Length: 312
Image (cartoon, rainbow, N blue to C red; front, side, top):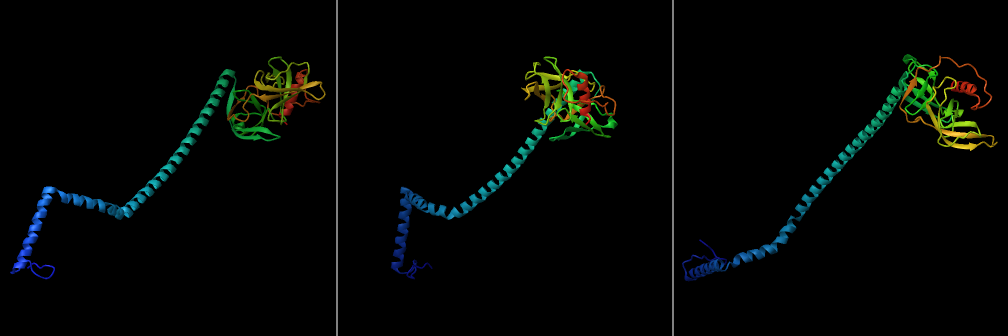
């Protein structure tokens, strides 16, 4: 039995209940006909949906924000990891590139040494620099060859650009080289432009060479090439030694003083060549009495001075 709000039944036996049911059925029929004919109910639903839509979005805002934050955090973490990995790969690539550049430069130096070896047509020995001492009082190198490899005291050491120095001490598997810039070293040289002979001494100033007591009448200029003269028999003649960089008169005005820069890469060469054919016998050279720096007018004394200073 269907009940109304007031507790009565729509399908009661009395007339009032039947009339109420007929009215409800008539209203329902009219509404269905109007909805079918005028299509106004979808419009009502559409307007209601427009009103309710902001509330729907507002209700879903916390979930959307949480989802967006989770995605943003995941993306940031991924980007951070990718950046860290890319930085590591970049550092590794730079290290490999620098190593390749260093290997290429080393190969170029080795090629120059091999070319020099072929051009000389002399008996030479390849050695590697394992230690460097470029202090204020000593300019020396240590090589990875010694008596077991046939190295002797007095052997001349060169690179692809010129003379570097001479061997002063030999151990079983290593040897010590005194560079031409060592304050205790001297080497007889010749000016290729004028033919002037002199002795170039090692200098503490910027690792160069000094040519003291040059006669004023000698036409020495900046840029002149100095080569080994061969006087004294220690150094072979014709090898590049240095380039004149400065010429000035002494305070007395009687002589000139020249400074020169070595042509050899004394501070950059990793491999060097030892000349075997011209190595003097092992042992100290004969004593020589030298009162002062020799000049070009004393070739034999200059050669003896070069030998003596090379073994101090």
